[in-house]
Length: 112
Image 1: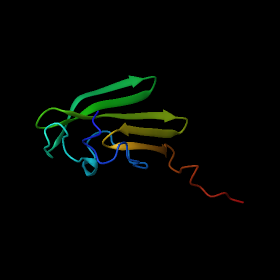
Image 2: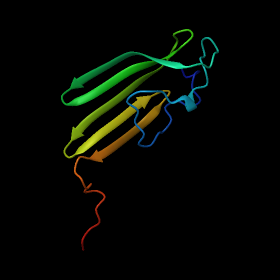
Image 3: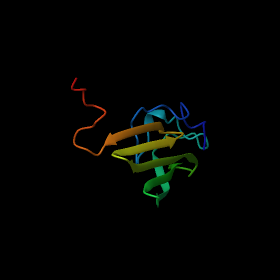
């Protein structure tokens, strides 16, 4: 991975977890060929380990195939919640948890 290609390493993205795509606001340009062009996705793989889906891929410079960053996205269901995580030098780090129930028990107000 190349910290010369990004403005900030692993920026905090809150709860924005990307399963695909690139966070171009953080892309300075390729440190190898000094071009600021499209970022391609290569070597995309999806694994399913013990009920956890893991998507990994490389962000690559369109012009010289320089690997800018390695992206990892995970999805799992834990108890009654869908759990998402993302970790990538370019796209950042993020976590999110969403209830699978119609009404999220964490969001409901106490009755008394």
